[in-house]
Structure formats: C-alpha cells, structure tokens
Image (cartoon, rainbow, N blue to C red; front, side):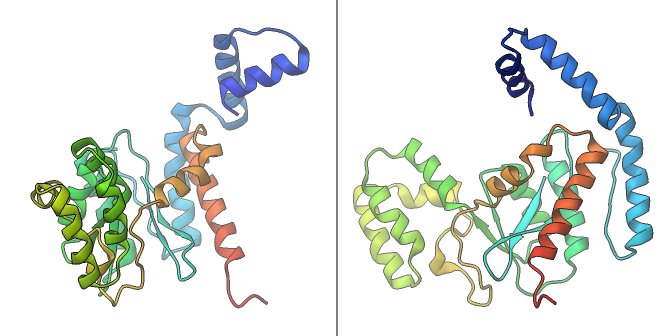
Length: 254
C-alpha cells in the first residue's frame, strides 16, 4: 500500500486525521524494519546474483555499476516474461546495455520481431543490437502522435483498418483514402514512423501479428504492488512471480 492508501485506511479504521508526511515517514520506517534499508539492498543484490548462478548455472544475471523491462507473448498470446532490469532513467546507453544482455539470454534467432513504443532511446538500442530483427512499432502510439498532427476523423476511420489489413492490396486501398484527405501523411510517416506498423508488412514466418504493444502496460500492472520494495527484494519478488507463472502454464501437467 502506498502512503495515500495507508492514510485513508488508518483514518477510516480509527476515525482520526493524520498528516500525510507523518504517514509517509512512518511507512518508510516500517518498511525498513520489514525489508531492510535501501542502502543495504544494493549489496544484497550481488548476493542474490551469486545464489542464482550457484543453483541455476545456466541463468543470465548481469549487474553493471553504470547503473526495463522486456517481455514477449507465448503461443497462447499470453504475457511471457523474458528479462528485466533496473535503471535510474530510460537513456540510450541504459537501453543499449539492457538489449545487449537480452541478446545474450535469447541467443541466435532466425526469426525475431521486436515491437517498441515511442521511446527513441529504445529504438536506437534495438537498431544497434538487433539489426536483423523485424523492427516494429506500436500502432496505438503512432495514432496518438498522428492526432496531434492531423485534424479530423478520416485517419481514424481508415488508418486502423489499414493497420489491421492482412493483404497489401487492402492496405493500399485504405491508405489511398487516407491520402485523399491528408496528402502529407506519407512523408510524415516515413520521417517519424519508419518502423513496421501494418500487419500486411509483417513476415509470415513470425507468428505474431499484434499491431499494439500493450505488453508494457500488462507488465506494469503485474508488478505494481511490488514497485516500492527495496531492490533486492523487488528482484526476488519478480523472480518468484515468474516461477509461479511458468508453473501455472506448464504443459502437459502431471
């Protein structure tokens, strides 16, 4: 529970009023007693790495002192955690480091698609580390940017069906209608949204035709309750949740 939720719960339960700052600091004091101090958790993280490598020798655990997330979908179109990392900010260098570690974990892959949102740092890292992957971008983010540039409903009426179209012929037919209303849309897309966003352009060998990248939201919702934990405990909490997830989806079950 965050400070606001704790404050509301206490005031409701005991019929009193408590200053927010009091709740904030006392909640932190309680967290220190339960989980330890933040300063100590960084040292514990290296112990966590050593323990994982001891008990699961094939695992990839990287800690860089220069110091979020990556996930995928499985055959059932379910969220499938692959790797996670912790950064102070989403910079090009941080994303590049993360992508490099992800590449080590994945190993060589003949058919790989990476779909990103509007993060330019992530786009740069993707092109640098995975130059041969099919590089896609979230169509929902594209549309949000398009609304800022083009006024009217014509793009919404035809752009979504065009992105979902499975054939090039249908895609071109719908895009022609968009161009009739917005003649400058094609050069704008080439300049600002040059990655793949239309289903008709996806490789047939890659059996994933998602045009939206909603995985990030699913991931954030999945770990929401653990985000305020110290680093080492947060790491183990995510590991624990992942193990439970894999066990639930294990097939065939005994």
